[in-house]
Length: 104
Length: 219
Image (tube, rainbow over all chains, first blue to last red; front, side, top):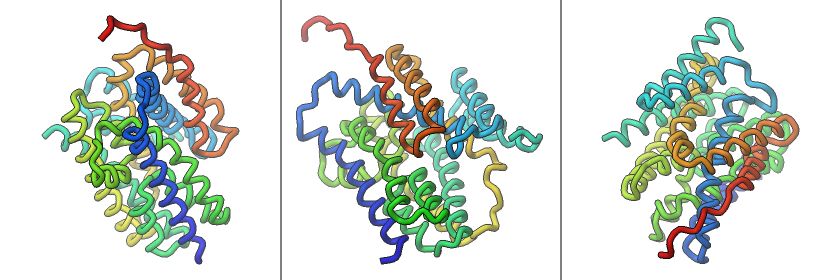
């Protein structure tokens, strides 16, 4: 088998198993309220860690200033309860303009 | 409908990232079918990018698959978090599992009532799947003609989407806020030292700050 086929199959089956296990466990075993509380807090913790590393890092190093500046702009807009579209476009536009001006 | 309007921006951004995934893969020397089939059956953007990255860097299929799988371990926790939203039907579970992504989970959890959460999950999930795969196909066919997508600032759009989606929960719950802050600090601190995917998992250490809620009046 070709290397690409191996990667695709292993990744597809493994990923689907990960996704399904959470769903299936939920119905089969009685999950204590405390564990459910931790699971939903855990989802937020994971998402915040994803956004922090996504905003600041690239391949294990610093991503440059333009990206975190854009995310910060989006964060400020979100904090001020701006519509979702304004948050997303504001973040991308800030980063794009900073790059145009020569920031990393 | 506001769910469709809010989803459509995530779709747009994902579609463009999908185009760049297809283009990067083909420009790196993979045949068109590799990014296209991978997107359909794996359907996890960050894992796909890293697996193809390792493959193109000559890391071999085992390392490529392992990197992608490590990144996707988090989807098990997400599955647990959205299990109630997806419901217990066999078909909806089997299909819903494949649609569990960062964006769709965050979008569903950000809604206020269960009916809206369910609608948000399916609208965001199915739309994202369609747009992501269309984008990858277009990118793979277009090859390198698109240029550097970083110039459009899209790499900032994704973290910003997540900020907008988790902010309501962070505002509402001080305990979750403390856990998330500690988790983010841990993730950032270990990023230079560990393989991709591990920092986010270590962020779960932030849950140590999650104290048991005081017991309310007996139900």
